[in-house]
Image 1 (cartoon, rainbow, N blue to C red):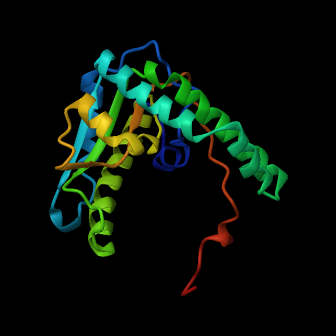
Image 2: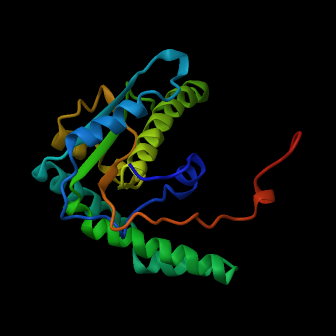
Length: 216
């Protein structure tokens, strides 16, 4: 366990892409500890209609990683990066976004080497479901997954919330034997021990851009 205060844990649990140790296995017991904490997260109407598919199997992780790598590289072209960056008028924000995308490309290129993955899912598919039901179901599984990621940070594990693979969701379902018609995948979380444990507070836009007191 890292000696982090609760504030340090909440403010330094980063999306880790460049500092993942691909060479070190992630212990199943460590993952189980994190999952048990994740399952303590709030769940709408106490439904607990979530599922978490964990794999440390080298062949499975590599196969899922190859899907992610292929989809990411098919979506994110140099032309897309140039056009999107050019649309950002703030030079500092533009540079920060390009650095983030460079690290995302690094993750995509190396995803097949990730030693462990987590795929959170929900029971039943929500295609076309009312917004209230979607909020109930997504809100529960996302909170549980974030709690898992916080628990991982406290134990020296790096994670990153990704959703790129969802355009090939059924392909990943087949690799992991997830019943596609019954379980909707929510994300794909790469997991590895981190190279070093000193992560900084993330840069964010000004507080007042987002927070509205006593109404909008």
